[in-house]
Length: 224
Image (cartoon, rainbow, N blue to C red):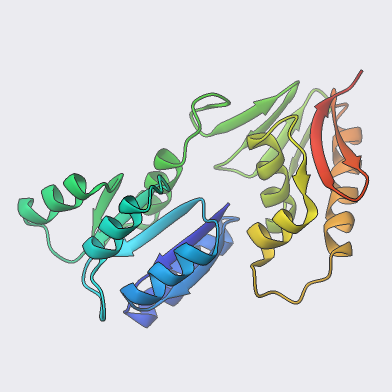
């Protein structure tokens, strides 16, 4: 899952990015509202964390312009203020949630999980498909044969597959979502991580498999 963080306080931004990456998210950081809007126009994010008070363009203006474009990406607003007016303004503009600084890291992570929850395939903090369950809190992949705690890239790849079961995901989308649009990582790295995941699914006696579609991408399918 890829998140855009717009926060002009650079020490806080570095700390939040480190926290997100430690918890198996991919994160891009920008430091003003105008740059945030540019990134949101150029790339496909699963969630956005917006500080209200930013240079060039405040977070509420970014959010308003984002919603005017028709984007429904989940947005969490960060604010140093706790007045009701700020909260109401954010909610009326289209934010999904807000968090007042300073905040506990556990609460930030919980709010991100809550606002990105896909009800059709997810209950609580788990994604499931076939006899396989992915716990988004512990990063464990579980099936009848046991469980594995996944490393960052493995986790993000299987999460993307399990959020989109039976759908072919282009190789380029894995690169964009997990390594970033500007990354110089080569395409074959996707195959390497797919190979790791296939071995783990086989060891867990999963009844699902990662299927390759030639020159296109990969999909998570039930075994026939």
